[in-house]
Length: 462
Picture 1 (cartoon, rainbow, N blue to C red):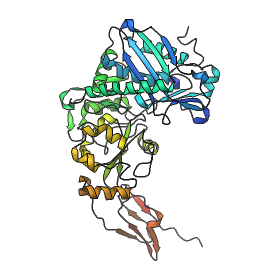
Picture 2 (picture 1 turned 180 degrees about the vertical axis):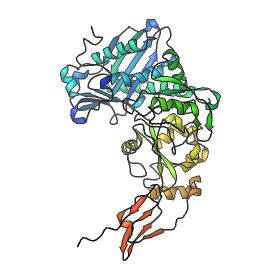
Picture 3 (picture 1 turned 90 degrees about the vertical axis):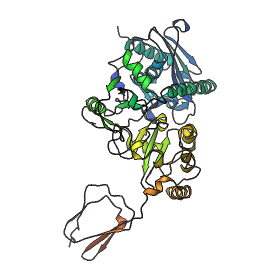
Picture 4 (picture 1 turned 45 degrees about the horizontal axis):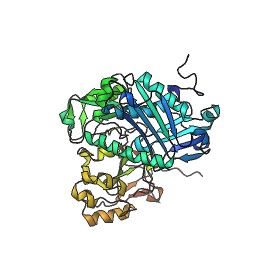
């Protein structure tokens, strides 16, 4: 008999990575429209919980409005002889994996950022209660993680209760994050890797060090160590850091070897402390993104919670798409908020001397870890809404990044009617003016990145 015989939909790894579009969803739980949402795992004593008990606080799935969106929380309590607090974070991260095993459920992100959709098709098949989802979670946890001897799961849709438990969860997250602060990458011989997001980004692997959190912001070095000890063949595993190849950029031979193996050769080199060259890959669950603003030679930072457009006119969603999917994209760098607090944050790029813009909400969260000058000379949406406003602000504050600015005279490149090759980048049509004998291309304050641009005069059709 199947472990899921009494579940009305299929359960299996085949459904990982399933996307549910808005037109096909029965209900949306949490997500960007809701300020309060969470998932939290807590370690308990054996006599404190009732094994495989599933509780729903608030309306159940069948009572929620079709096509609607509601506040949502998942609270999981686990117990066992080997259970310890250091296992809470990685156990919590498995919610992402296990929910995505269920046909017709899409789970994205983590912690206070969760975003879940249930499809109409699965709802119509009978997946109309959180009780079914709780049963699947409980059985998967106990079969996949044998150190869990008892588990109790609570789903919360009551808005008042979600808010209350959300606030409590934030305190737990902060306590976890604070534990690794003060440790240095140079003080340990082992880092940790995580491939939990490979169902959505097959060429992505997170590298977790004392000074660089997982991109999702939910797995610290201590969490990785605890997970690898109890489940050494699982998706969180030890990486011998090997030889230090570049201290400034953060290149280690052990990381390169591991990521090449885990991505089947798609990625073979990572620099941990920079957003350029061979930056750490980004999945899609990252808490925030550091994005390069070429007009000012600096970085902006934006997180999922920011609802407006950034200083370069793009929202988080567009910037996230530019760097997600397990790719190494120069200047688009998925990160955890905790990494912003690290002394290694963008170290090879200049650290805080290169950060020029972030939402006020992020600044409030990390200001205790920012250099004193950066608190005043990094703009927020309150000081700069456009690149021009940002330039003015940075000049007024004498931000260190302005030392990198250079006045560039327009480069004029002329070509004859014959085919010429110009080392350059794509340029707007308005920058090219046709003249007799050829044409002239004028670049103004351009940054040249492309390997080759071929300019060919088209013969007149007469």
